[in-house]
Image (cartoon, rainbow, N blue to C red; front, side, top):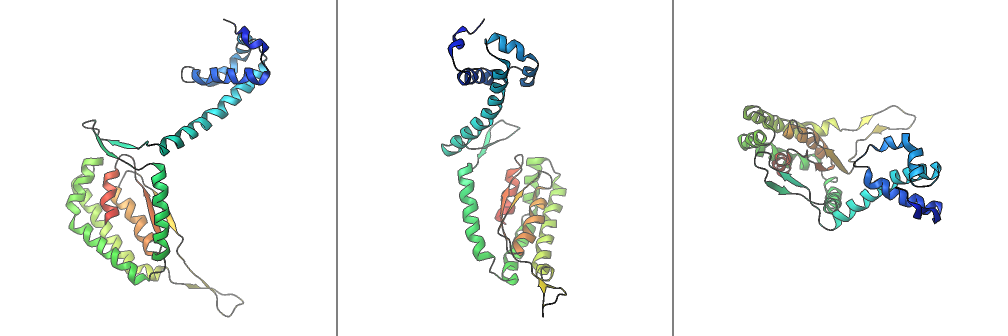
Length: 245
């Protein structure tokens, strides 16, 4: 079938129509196969090969733009990531949208403005409390890891206890680790200082779900930074106790 109606259209109009046609056929056909059939497509649409090539490029450009705009609209009007329990197929939880995450980052930044001015001694107090919470709930947290990602309970308990040791370690030694280091220069006194950065994002893997958090969060918080955690999608619940701690 030939699209005779396109003959009276401008080159730009024909390109838009062809781009629309290509858009809904991308899911059914290998897009890159079109490169090898440009002549056939041009003959089918009664147009020039250059116009078909332009339409292909236009399609490549429009698809990610459309996906971006749709994603922004979905985030704005209520799309929420969900977690499904593999064993039952039930929805276990619904998480915040991208807009809510922006608010979380902003509030974390505000908290960091005060946290970064605290002394190492003041930062060490909540870090040691976190270690106590970890030790007191090691069996519960080990069971949670076993349910979510299959880690043996014995290994999970050991992992939680390791996090407690790490928390105590950085509470005890961070001030020494980050002490100014003198350097030689032409000035009367020169040194390298280690100042807090700001909000630090951590993108977590799924394995060792507690330790991966604390090996980053303990030194980061003790250094005066604030942290935002992006959980692994298949074990988000495991991270909740570690954040609460």
